[in-house]
Picture 1 (spheres, one colour):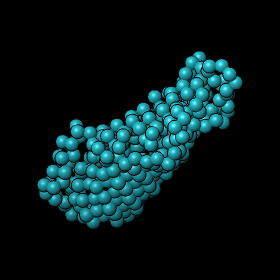
Picture 2 (tube, rainbow, N blue to C red):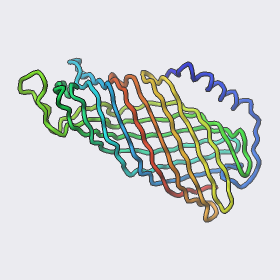
Picture 3 (cartoon, one colour):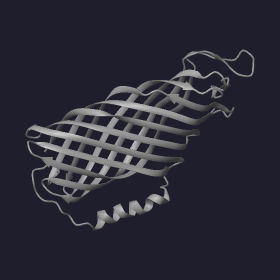
Picture 4 (tube, rainbow, N blue to C red):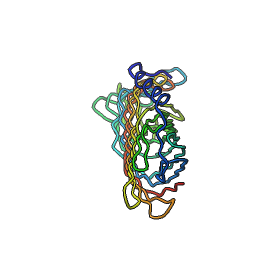
Length: 290
């Protein structure tokens, strides 16, 4: 894994801050004070957009390209669940979160592309279905540069694990291949772009929380990275905003919004990609804290 050189100063600054900044924890009964634990589960109706340019898939047997072209897909919303937990002894904290997505998108493979080794006529785009089954797990270590019973602000350092269980394109119509002859792309023909592939993405970021009267807490975090991960040049941003209300001791109702943007350019297991993935949506759930 090779980080982009332009990010090294930022990582060095984060490491320097973690090493030299004094502990400034103030004892209190906030969700981030002293020794604390928080676990939550939320419904996450996530909307996903996926677009691909210059995708190239080589036959593992070495017979040549089986897919070469562009894919335009419509957005799709699926019900998902967002789960996570935080634990720490202020000013330090560790956090983990996870959500999965499994959905189908209507799409179009551009005319002139190669699909299953056959060339689509330039004048005949191929109506298709994009199947996307992926999972995102995030691990973070935080250090509060300011921590009081009312407000805390922290630095974050961690890693996001993207797992693509399935990224495939299926023809929704029959098309006679270019160049004459009787070769046909049939309904149901499938081209696998990524199957059981994953990538670990290093991230840095910031987090803030504010405690308000009547058991209300507002929080948010922003993480991201522009890095070279294996053979992928990746630009990644993850924004999470939430509001929490505690009607009873140790219990919170929560509502929030999460937005993820990932631009991947490069190669994964011999498949060349220039893909943009956007996932966003509101979430609502319950948290338990100590």
